[in-house]
Figure 1 (cartoon, rainbow, N blue to C red):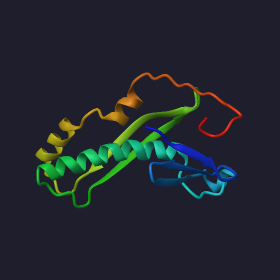
Figure 2 (cartoon, rainbow, N blue to C red):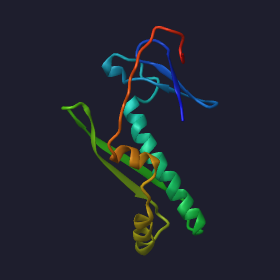
Figure 3 (tube, one colour):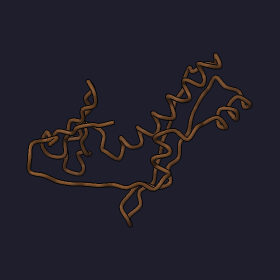
Figure 4 (cartoon, rainbow, N blue to C red):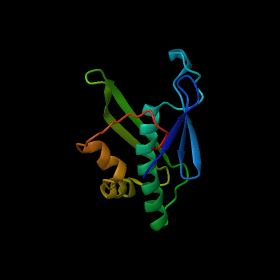
Length: 134
């Protein structure tokens, strides 16, 4: 899995993955142009999207309604070290009764994004003056 980010001035970048593009930026109150979500917001999108796609598939396989399905993800900022912490995910599935909601909760997997956030990882960062991608 790989993405490329190309600087577009200020805090704005264009992210590319396969044939898709997405603008990243910072809020205008921080001096940026607010043309896209921040990297931290995209981290929450990734977590919520991973869970949301699983829930939609779960509902479809059981022929349950996904009408009004939504996923809300929150995290708190931490100062030392600077990071996000205490992620909270709330799934709203209006078409399910209490028994179906409890069954859904029990079925939620530890998927790729969830495991990535909950496990210790290595992070290697290098810099070069050569051609991008070299």
